[in-house]
Length: 444
Image (tube, rainbow, N blue to C red; front, side):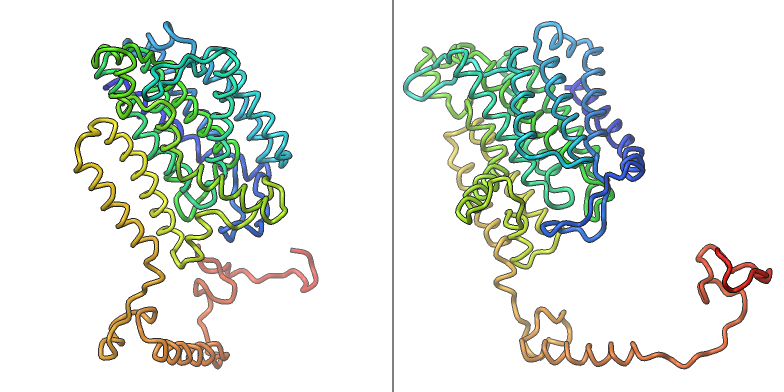
């Protein structure tokens, strides 16, 4: 655990320290697109934050390769090399898209190629356990197609949810934390070394997101862009594929007597493809709803709009920060609830706690629709949004009158020469006392 934490801290530090220079580079390179109709931010913000995140990924893998216990991951498995090669390809495509706006179909093809590169190096799903049936081995083509599909779905789900400051990085970080706990339990609790790569990938992905979040929280100073969203989506998919498709279920069957019985009885412990889908449940739901909505309206599934889940939260009346926190809450509830259920599925308290938290989440989600109204005697003590409609309208009219009165030009008053902040003087200090001898029409 100490080596995993060291790798996490190095990844956080490298990503955080690289983001500042990357922001300056993005501004100099002109990677600051104009405000689009679907955007929420109001000022042009540089992209290319994925460059810093890729640097954190490389630093985390490099440090892990030189640690005594984690070095075995690189010696016994080719998965780290597969991840790095696929991540480098998808990151390069994302950087080009952040600068030159690549067509959506070209990006989709690049995502399939990146997934294929990882499959060719051994990062693929080999089998899936099915309740009542046992372990079902997949043919090479079945495993490859399922792996490519899972990678492409995860990448686009994360890319679709990247619409508010800090939303994608925070949701992926929360989901990856749950995945790390699950993978570490399989690796340490059951002694299965095949779960070590997924544990390492999850630790590095958490570091990438944590290092980037301070620069990306509202108001964001830099966006991760497609170079970052597609990158963390691919790493998340690689972690899920490694823990679900590479771990031999026979090792878990030793604890329940018989492979079929073990697969059926321990399904909550070894959730085959359900855990990755529950970890990205919110982004995948947003992706599916977006495709259905656009197809129903006769648009291309890749056409951009303002109908995503985070846009709906803003329309309900939530602020930017509260909408992000609500998405965090649901992402954490689904991911950690699944992991908790996998640990002890027979405990009813876990189900009751998840149900109670879900009810609380629904109340928070619909809170703007049920804005409480203060009694009339206390209306002067609460903000206008909590007052009755008549009083609120009257207060708004009074505020408009005061604003009009304040906007009338005030009579001029003499100002002492050399006072900072008046007549165009800068905030650094008073303007120069030397007279300007240039002519009025001269160029400045």
